[in-house]
Amino acid sequence: MFFIFSFLFFISEAYASTLYLSPGNANIPQGSIRSVIVGINTAGESVNGVAAYLSYPTDKLEVAWITYGSRFDIAAEGTYGGGSIRISRGSVAGVVGNVTIATIGFRGKALGSAGVAFIGGSAAPRTSDSSDSLNLGGSAGGAYTVVAPVPVSPTPTGQQKEELSINNVEVTDISTNSATITWMTNQQADSTVEYGLSADNFLLSFHDEALTTSHSAKLKGDALAPGAIFHFRVKSKDSSDKEATSTNYSFQLKGYEVRIRIIDPSGNPISDKDVILYSETQTSRTDANGEVVFRDVTPGKHSLVVKIDEESEETSEIEVADSPLSQSFTVTVGGASGIFDYGTLILIIIIALILAIIVGIVYFIRRRRDREGLPQSQDPSVTAQEPIQTPDVQTPQSNEQRMTLEEQMQYLKERNQNTQQQ
Image (tube, rainbow, N blue to C red; front, side):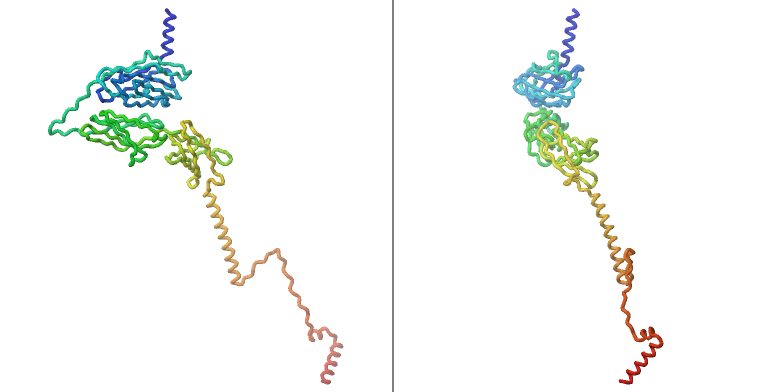
């Protein structure tokens, strides 16, 4: 007996997680949509994935839409139709507790009972060893009844009908290429979403003519690019063709993660600098390793600006691939074609101006001295020149000064004789 009890206890512990629907029982008016939550209770275990496979009667119910919870953020599978729903989601970090996997919008088709049950293929692998923790037999489906639609009471004569209004507009289940828009109206009305890349140009649209007060529109397709920002508004029109339009909203699809390392020409990381990524502007600051991380980036070419200081920057370009894997880039700044240092340029200009002023002053002083006839300063290294010697010119007076008295008398005698002869 103890062995049997232990074995049963081991089985219950080995398969502890359970799936459930909430509400488990509800009425769904014919033509209306009822939201049903698909959840998992891990009973304290950590699971890194979940597969919830369900069946439903196609004559009584149809699936209008499915949105997904945020805890299991990796999409693996999400199909519905023909009486089968297949939801598979994952999580890298692991999930513990009572968690919403998805929300299904069931629309009532024909009156009667409709059972929704979990079927084979459902699973909840453990984070530790990927073994299945799901107790499928203990998982609870739902029992729903499609009832007659709520009649619209006629408006009494002389009484004005309440205006159609829109409220509780939300965006859920955002992925790289899809998003779900939900809203409520105070009266039964159809569902329209107009959306596009600019607030004044809605080129795309979604429409569901079914009248309901709980509206949901799943936007998807090739036009929805990862990381792109979309603007939208919702519209609803009742059976009297009275229409209500919401204000404009926007959402951003999940994009790709980009890691950029900024280095100098020597390969050293450049830290504590602002890096700006365009075209959807994102700014981040480099860490000690010179790295910045940008998320929700669109695929394609992007300009990258590294701000060195208030006046110095370098622009380069990266091309992001259309891949969900994290992408890394290395950008070198400060090379010959890189940053232009305005601080150094200003210093050079100041020094050049000072030198020009000094040269101008020296030139002015020399010009002034030349005009005033002032002696030029002599270079002490130059030896003074010897005065120019001129040959002695002998005159009679100088010769007489050199003659003796006897010679002078002889000279005078000869001179007189010459005079008389003449």
